[in-house]
Amino acid sequence: MGEVTGGSVNDGPPNVAIQIERSHNLTNNATSLLAVCGGVTALFPITAIFLNVFEGDELISFHISSAIGIIVCVLLIISIQSYHRRKVISLLESIDIAWDEEETLDLKWIIELVESNRGGKLAKEIDETTGAATYLTRGDDLKGPDWGRSDSDMSKRMLRRDAIRHGKKYEGMEGELTKGEIMVATVDDLAAAQAQRRWEAAEANDPEIIEAGVERLGDLVREGHFELTADEGAMRRLTGGFSEEE
Image (cartoon, rainbow, N blue to C red; front, side, top):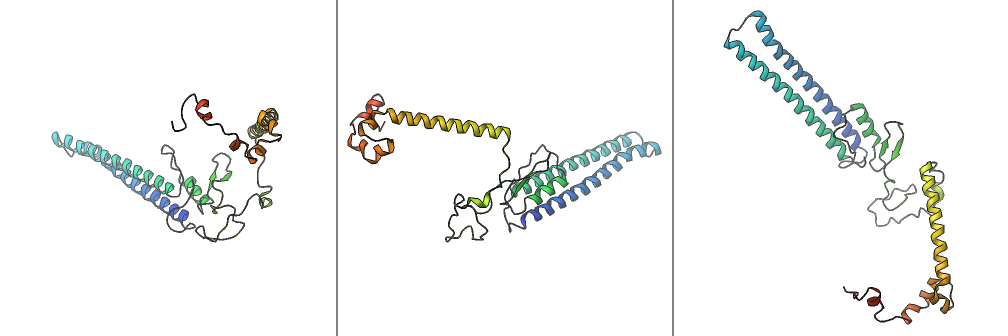
């Protein structure tokens, strides 16, 4: 579910909604007309029997013709409804709304869904159970927060706005974490702290760092230690005889 293609961004969803509603109405009208035609066709042989209009082979031929007419009406109804479904799904896909082909086409729900997609880049997904709306994108500024400006997406003058430096604008926008999210965040913090302790222990016990009289691996790199102590053929020995090219 997402972005409008073709025409102006603001005009896309309403046009799609109108086309879907028009197709729905035409399909219903055509289906009703064909159903009436099929019903009338089915009544003809029954009426002919009661009125004794045909006899023998003529009656059989009339029954066969009526059956063929009913089958044609049914096939046309199926074909029209199938075409309507394909058209609706295609229109929804044109504004990046995915629709399960097995799902029933509820006109009211589809129109609400399309209307909620107004603007494309600020498209929303509506939860069918709770009715809650969730934005599917992060706004229409592909280079970062727009801060209320209206620069063109293609403008060469537009600079990236730093969301970290101006982060106060977004304070309070996050909802409360779910129990699962709290658990994941806690585990991430514990894993990060454990990794940091392992790293610090490895640095403290590294013989090259101790010998060089520095405290951090970065200090060793900055002083050019590895360039000065480069060992020709070390990579070959480390990889068991395979060269770097191999």
